[in-house]
Length: 131
Length: 198
Ligand SMILES: Nc1nc2c(ncn2[C@@H]2O[C@H](COP(=O)(O)OP(=O)(O)O)[C@@H](O)[C@H]2O)c(=O)[nH]1
Ligand SMILES: [Mg+2]
Image 1 (cartoon, rainbow over the protein chains, first blue to last red):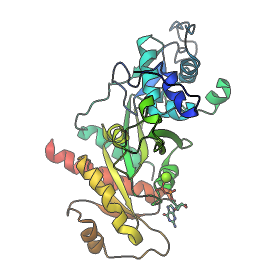
Image 2 (cartoon, chains in turn purple, yellow; image 1 turned 90 degrees about the vertical axis):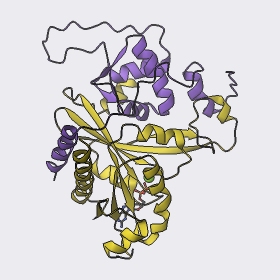
Image 3 (tube, rainbow over the protein chains, first blue to last red; image 1 turned 180 degrees about the vertical axis):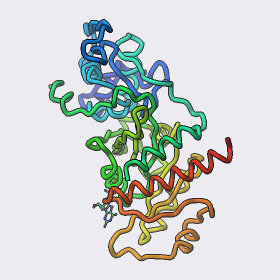
Image 4 (tube, each protein chain N blue to C red; image 1 turned 90 degrees about the horizontal axis):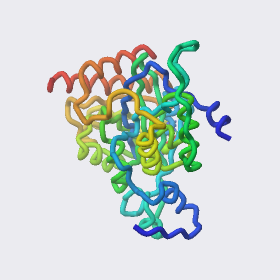
């Protein structure tokens, strides 16, 4: 793949991924929840040691993602929205950051399985509770 | 800059382990953005996806050279449904040509709520084709606009060629209760389908 940086703003998303159009691993759904691994313990005063944040060598975009994700969990598409990046680009960067140990996904990996009745019932109950 | 960003961010509750999504689909100006905004507990966000005319999302330069590159907005919101579960709603573009975006949207989606306007029922045909081709279970909600004709349900069903089991409801995308009820109709329907295949 050749890079053809011509200075137009449209080029930027490609450049920030280092020239790749696809994540190395296709594990990210739009709603996969992502969180920084260097989080403070969930409970104040908890004993979970805080992982020091290793940020050297990260591109500005990756730094912004890690910084954003340190505050708590967000979905892939929310990260894209907050940082004004297209979803495809965001997935590439997130994939790198999971590989490098800066970020982790929370909960089960996205699957294409049939939604279980139990899950749908939980959705229904949650919606009814909002009425 | 990042601190300002972070302070404006509403994070997913720490206990949440599961995120699901439902698509809000319909033609231009049918009320998708309004609907998502009405129900979302976070300030609705949007991403701008670069698209070629052929419909591939543009993450690489090949498409960017093309003058026909456009952006398509994807807006979405979030609802926390329990300590464990959040639901994301996506306002999905009504054009099939955004293939890769539709791949992303449809993958793992529980189902779709199709918003229609009775004054422009024909404009909904293309959207319904996409949803059906993707095999997404759906319900139809007439988003009532002042001045739009009120047709008997049977006529709307016939015009849209709905299966007898497909829910058809009326809603006002500006109203929280009415919009929530439309979503409940959809999920009720999904449960019926799930119950059959389980
Ligand atoms: N009267 C009425 N107007 C609505 C309703 N829903 C949306 N609108 C208006 O219709 C226009 C298009 O809505 P929008 O949500 O942007 O449509 P989208 O293109 O499908 O996202 C906006 O001006 C809305 O304020 C509704 O239920 N009733
Ligand atoms: Mg819109």
